[in-house]
Image (cartoon, rainbow, N blue to C red):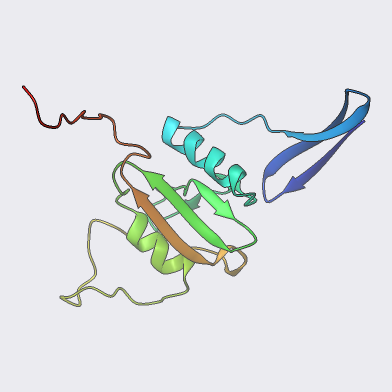
Amino acid sequence: MCRCSRVEGEIRQAAQVRRWGAFVAYEVIRMEFQTELHARWSVFFDHLQVPWAYEPVTFHDDEGSPCTPAFWLPEQRIWFAAEVEAPVWWDRFAMAAEGQDEWLDRGGEEPDWCPPVEVPKKWRGTTLLAEGPFFPTTCRASTRGGA
C-alpha cells in the first residue's frame, strides 16, 4: 500500500512493509539536491522530525534574476538558506519575505547591486541563513605532553 501527499511542492511517499511479522511504516523521499550541504541539512531536519520542502518556489527580483532559497519549513513558516557563502540576493529576499518595505541601509540609499524581490503574502515568513560548511572540512589531532 502506498499513499502520496503533496505538501508545498514536495512529494512524499509513505509505505508499509512487513518486517518480522509486523508492519513498519517508513517514508521514502526521492530528492536531488543542488549541493551536499543541502542534503546534509535535509537529514538534520528529518532527524528532528521537522517537515521541509526543498526549493519549492523561485522568486524573481525586479530584473528577472532568480532567487531560490533552499528550504521552506511550513510549520514554522521559515525560509532557510544553507550556503557556504551568502547569495547576493539574500538580504533583499529576507526583507521581502519578512514583509519589510524599506531598505534598512546605514547610508539610507538603495543598493544598486541588489534589486528588490517580490514575495507573495502566502510565502512570507521568518528567514534564517546558515553560512559556512555543515561540518569542518579538516580536523586537527592534538597531542599532549611527551615528545
